[in-house]
Image (tube, rainbow, N blue to C red; front, side, top):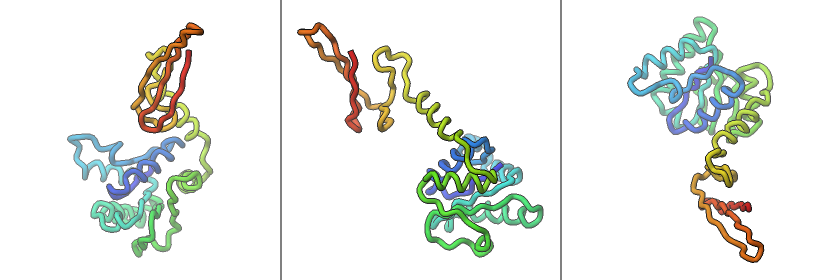
Length: 196
């Protein structure tokens, strides 16, 4: 299992890293997936850290100032020195220098979630290049989220271009041909489609 340590301001990036790994079948400990309302935050983090074989630290100016990140890193380093696990993987977001104890560890430079980023992260954790599971997962999820089986005309509940749910439907009648046209338009990106 990999524990993803991050500052709240970098949560979107940490979540994206988690998704890259989950799509590969990796067990990921990510706070918003593991800590429910009413749970003890400290107990949940301790449990996640104690079961981790890998520890990804999403490093940035935000992380360098975060007490939780420092505590999680200290616990992971202590366990790594005494037991050999977890394997620590720094994922660097900006030019903030890594803590002294991480400077001899090869880090990954995160470049916005590119395919190169995904490949390097998966390879660092799995020891192999990523499979095509992410692409398949995205395509399946896309169809699950975008399709509306209850709409007999278009069958869409979100815009296929931008993902907005701000869709408006209208119709027009061509009296000369005795045909009715149905038009679906996205209010956010102006995508539209029509059918008879």
